[in-house]
Image (cartoon, rainbow, N blue to C red; front, side):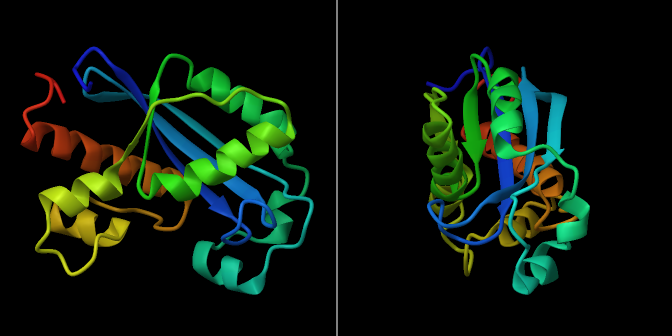
Length: 176
């Protein structure tokens, strides 16, 4: 049940590819929403210990050089989970982001039990007239600024605004 007393973490990740079992997380960006307001942010580049494919650099702007000397996922994930304590996780296409998060949690013997809300599902139900429900399409439809698309913090901030808009449209919570 969504209500104004819930605290949410809106998550976005960047990766070296599309498969949680054969690709790595390179960036985690998240914002915390309390009483309908963004109150905190979590951002970390992550050394995947593998080269970044050219197509990923072209899409995200993230290079192998940017990730040198950054912490690895085993260092970052416990910090991220601490940030998420007692929160519901929100993501756009949550199965992608959470697939990577859960896979890495299992790999490092970390517990990962969160309620999850997918803004992609919300957008498909609330805005069936859209030609697609990609993050940039939904953000544009709602006049939400999407800065640094395909970077974790920019996408997390836009997803947070989409989530708040959807909650307001559904009259869920006084302050969402």
